[in-house]
Image (spheres, rainbow, N blue to C red):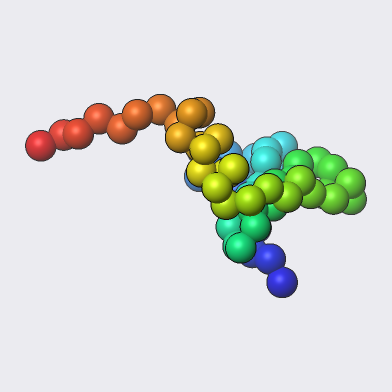
Length: 60
């Protein structure tokens, strides 16, 4: 059984993307769960996140 998570930025919104982090990574649209999911390798997911996630500032 997969555990699906959505971004904390989504709040209570239902129009978002959910992600399931397991051996493979599942991605699905909350508005169209009936259409299934996209599954990618953890390496592919990490590569995507490293490109789209803004760099975090170090605050010391």
